[in-house]
Image (cartoon, rainbow, N blue to C red; front, side, top):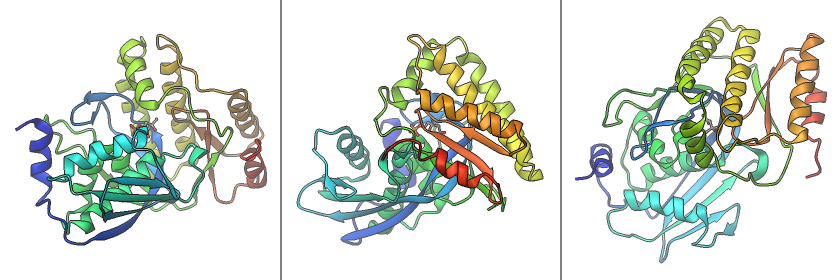
Length: 323
Ligand code: PMV
């Protein structure tokens, strides 16, 4: 038995559908401390732990028994040669024993180009729907272990609020799951700023591989994450927003330094990205508690407290570009 088959056999009680259709919702999540780098590619095990905040927006996914495999994203049926189709059914092939044809329909309640990890919420909603379709009755922690195989950050999209994905130490991957932190801080807001509608030139998967293999900063990354994660968790416990913002921003900057020093260098910044980061710094110099984070893309996500006075400006900044 190969490692992935053994892993799934441990988690999934059976592979016979119980219902003909099932639907589930999962929130999108933004990492405050990023997942970057794998210690095991087959089982999709991360090099380090990571921590995210879930958003109100997310994906609703329906999975149904059908006559042939298909996937529709926001109402549009995708070509079976598309990357999304291939990736999705590669994952479903691991789950279904026989090639039971399946129809998948996913709706995101945010623009696809918003730089929100639609793969994370889409795959998390899919796992929740599969749990109902097959009547597995798995615990959310076990669903997180399954979601990790589809897309790493999907394992954090099963809960609202602050969620930590534990890197784990076991070779079989069964201790690398996410769980919610017991922190109630709903005043803490994240606002994604849509700075471009263009899809990125290099996928995060490729950027992760290239940067971790070639950047001289790659060896420092686990150490940096240990520092940033500890700082973020402390800030959350203290509800110290300034501390949270600084550590979140530092982690995003460290990720982008890693990308800039890869060979070849990877740069996701557009002029609009750089301008917005400068604006955030200027607002801070004027006394506003606003911070940013940035994933593997040009979009910026603003971190602020609900009562922030410059909220109108934040909304304006996030609509800098025509839709
Ligand atoms: O889960 P993936 O394979 O799409 O990678 C996500 C990587 C980042 O979004 C950049 C960081 C993160 O922790 O979400």
